Image (cartoon, rainbow, N blue to C red; front, side, top):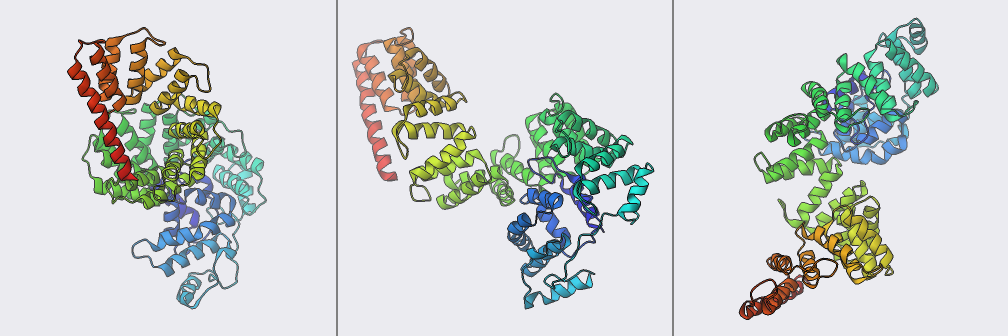
Length: 565
């Protein structure tokens, strides 16, 4: 089987090659007439499974030897960890792929333990890894085996398939100098003749702005043409575009229709997307059991996004059976495949001891992995661990660094924490303007802690003109989310008529709700209301009960703080 044929089969089986950016399968499928190399199939399965998806795309599109070399060790380890796949076989498989792409200098110097594998490689018809004989990338050939010149002759006579392959050759620079403009010309000509692969290819070019202006609507048009001819990856991508509202108004029913067609043919990404639609009732009636079924089908193919989604569904048990042990297993697999959300979830599990043994160091390790993969929530988690000295020596400067990275990406908790650092002057010079700015950004996203902190600055006139009415607005928003401190503070404004009409009854209600959450200040304020008879019949005994409870709550808080130190 030719390499491009093997890749197409893998793409159809495993779904999208790229996790974030839409795949460029048509380019990958026309890499040239490489003969299949030993271990090629296993290496590609590891790459497709999720952890090295972007590397595979770069490898296929740009022959990026530096990138492949930098990740080769990770691929070797991932292979060696597979059942019935030895370390020697993993080394040989990766070396074979390196030679298949002409990356001879990516291969280690041979040692004696590889002798049998070099022999096996030689017997397969290739130059042995480490032999010093370069394996050149062959010119692009047509399916009939004719060379590029003959392919051009057929294309010029109107052969749509030849035009498609010729266009792909120019786009990739295989057997001819790379020329995107010429490649697009031939690909478009083939697509306009109704060639489904070329139509899909034009969709990919328009989606990614490669050789043409990026245009979602045009991508959607080409995908639809190919999808209506039965191109399974076009059906998959069309479903994704309707789900995301790209190139057309968001339409979950259309998304469901096209994803269903691709999912039924085994495309893992489509199966995962279908599971998502069933889980959240998008384009179809909500059905957690169906969601689990489709997630599981995709996860069993090694589709990492589905592994994470299945794990989260089983962890929550919402609408389906809860299975913590299996959930942890799937989330761990997704994390090991490099899915940042799974890495972050696993970190949280280790931090809290949820489904795994509590381990702050492991939590730190997984937060760091997810943060380095660009997940803002994990950057915040990593910053918090440095801030609190959990699993690592306390380092407030490092905490500020990670809080800032996350905050600049819009992570609300990090924005609030960074605001606190500026407000208190921890690891940064105190700056009330900066504190106010970050609190406001977080508060406007609905973060209750930031809403409380912003209200406090407005109430006290710190870094801003004092404004009780505005403070009351933010306290109320935080209180409505259950923030006990905000309930107590809003109660004080209502009791004293600051910025709001005086209202003893609502103040009393808020003090009581906050006190029931163990807020000692609310205990004291509630006691004061009973002692003074404000909003309630005067009752000195009830008042003193709450005053004593305030002292008990404060003592309990001090004891807990001392034990944690």
